[in-house]
Length: 315
Figure 1: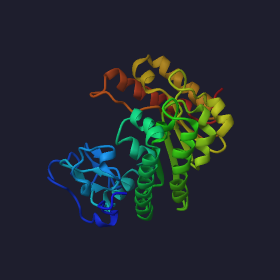
Figure 2: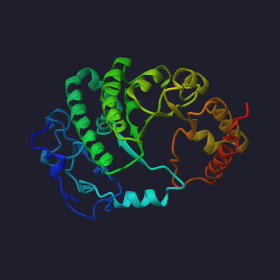
Figure 3: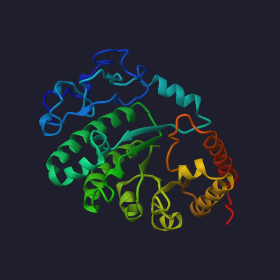
């Protein structure tokens, strides 16, 4: 770790580094102390990865280089806004805190191809980066857990380690090895749950995902984009994991309402028996503005989910 990098406890009242009005997120929208804005990664020795980084002394939190007009949510982060939102939505929603896992922290600082190359060419450096990211994630988790954030913690990142970019051995080291520790920490607090998000072809890794210690796995993309058949996933890990997803967003956004209804019914038919299934899209809407057909179909998807998602589930 860069010896000039300040520990989290030293960030204190930091709100901005250069210009308080330059950040798109002037309000503390995240309770986790993430920096918000474009930047490059400052590794233990900046010249290894990004020689353009001129301010290693400004590396904050997850190691992002703040050489631009960056803003940091105050650390320790205020929780009043989170508590108000959770209270207001108590009868309508369950609060979820979204975190990157260590691999996501590192992967988001570069591109997937470079990250994959590092597993061969810079494996020692990749481990150093993951070790540093893991400690920061754990510290942020402890703060949020002690503050009563939750009950659900949601993690992104494992998809970086799925083939073809990485090998099963890489997945074992960089996902199972690093993600098990945060899962254990979260579960040491009563009434907390963990969901892990991963796109890609996860079928051959279902048991290894379950070994991490999560409570739910999302997004379980069906063929042809993915390879997860819910009935098979249910048979193999259904008693260990809540299965979440299996409906492709693009199908819902672009196909007929009858087709959307069939997708919803089939996902519920496969996933719901015995419980442990949450109907969910495999992605969030990404068009801006959202086309009317997509908007109408999303509402239809929700209506059909309520219609078909009642026990006893019809075959």
